[in-house]
Length: 385
Ligand SMILES: *Cc1c(COP(=O)(O)O)cnc(C)c1O
Image: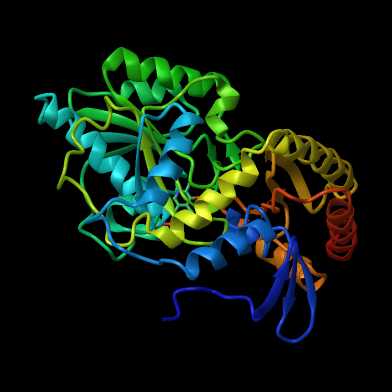
């Protein structure tokens, strides 16, 4: 179905941050398949893990114990606030689990009228009926009504508006620590801290959608760590499988109190193949020093970008973001800059608010950074009016 406005290029092979198209061109991939291939293409450790698992066992279902799932869950629990994990196959599904869990939490507590989730304008949580309602964006909802009830929206970053939206029906707060699709809008650490305090004050669950911000993207394993607080529930996907479709919903034991046998399920979720991919990603990301390197090179990339962009104020208004989740707020149509960058060999991703997103693989170093900066500088001078 023609549901995507695709660029007219197909890729045949990838290695690290480089992709080769079927017509023989070479590209520097600073989109990572929308923050998915966090360790680059064909990372040897991931290739080996998947090849070995593919020759052993692919799928058995959740009718049985899945050893790989138990291992990956234990490692996620060990490295986060969470006590328990549900595995699924995408970001939208991870959010669906979070939404169901929040409703069930209050139901189990005897509060059947508390079902409403307070979300932010400009949010993105996926494309299922529940998650488009949670995202609340007209462009994703138009024509698909009736909309799922139970979501209200307040401006992102505005604590007063959020507090004013709390009613006896409120169940949870759901936000991205850095809005991604909305245009790389970082949540102020103080705002995130106050969300935590507000959730506690009113007995609400705090849900972070870390589908895009998670798995090292911002220089810490999860973005909320920058704010020094923890959510009750967290949706993860994108980078978790390094390119294999894996999603996960993490929660505290308390938040997950309603998620008893039969309450939720997934046929594919957390199958042995998916868990081999996620386990291999964790091997690399949790190795001592890996995330420090990501933070370091993100800093180098950030300062070089700021320097280049300052020379072209007629094209780019601002560089913003956290770690390797960067937005260039454009003064020309973002689609035009993106197309020109692609023609010059640099892949990027568009976002709301007329932003071009840079989401490079976390393994980039000086060489890739300098090449990206060269292409960007050349492209910006070409498009300068
Ligand atoms: C990509 C994204 C989703 C949806 O993930 P899918 O795997 O496409 O369902 C949800 N939330 C955020 C923040 C995302 O960036």
